[in-house]
Image 1 (cartoon, one colour):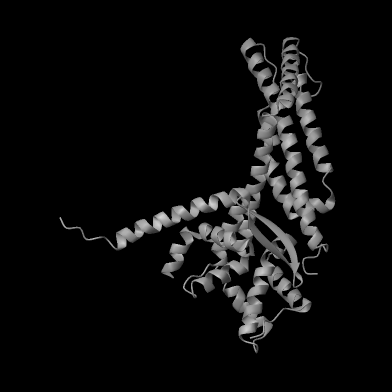
Image 2: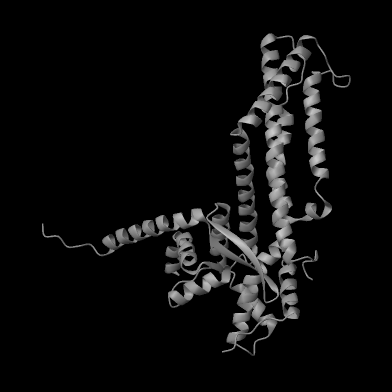
Length: 112
Length: 237
């Protein structure tokens, strides 16, 4: 549960990273990928995933294409040119933030 | 473990399940359906003895307290935001088009000069007895708006995308009509100000018209893309 709170803040970066690695994905595939990569430790809920995806589309970070799969319409998300550029920035910002948190959680002992 | 795929009959039941919960626009239903169907398929694959009804209930519960509503709400909010972005980027494109700006300045100046002339010579319309140029601008705006609406076909009027696009552009003309100063006056300062405002509104309305046509075209494109996958109007078909 606590992990999900941490995920919320970095959800857009996670989505962008997944799309950078996989090219194009659909919503359910993303939730499954996160579960598999983190060995079920992280779970993206639909209530968080779709607003994030729709926002990224509105901001021209992602674009969508639709296909008929198994008798239903499936929407695939892909990074736009702008999105590809933004992904690198977002990932480095998240890494920096995580490093800073690490420093707080594991402070180095300094002889004074 | 074999992955179970839902049949067309089972998908129909899923559509009905979504429909019963109030999500009736085909575009919204399609946004929910694939994710819901994937979840139901996974439930059925994990427990092959499970009934479809049970799997649908469990999959729906997994969507959380608000159920499918969070998907619908975010689709509404961000489709509106995307359309607003399209509208404003078209406004910017018009403002940075020198030829169009020259035409608009000419139009604005013509409206301004004739409005001053109507105020000074007390040319009023026969019905409201207000500045005839202001009333003409008001009428032209009304006719253009009605023409624009008449150009949207019946199918498009019902479409989710056109509905959202129309919500984005609906209030601009009303705001302009509200502030159109047409009352007659003798004060030179008020004549100057009123004529300037009438000219500005005429120019702004022209820009608004160009941007709204662009937005309605984009909404039509979205609708046609959706229709190519879902030609039937009935969301349950």
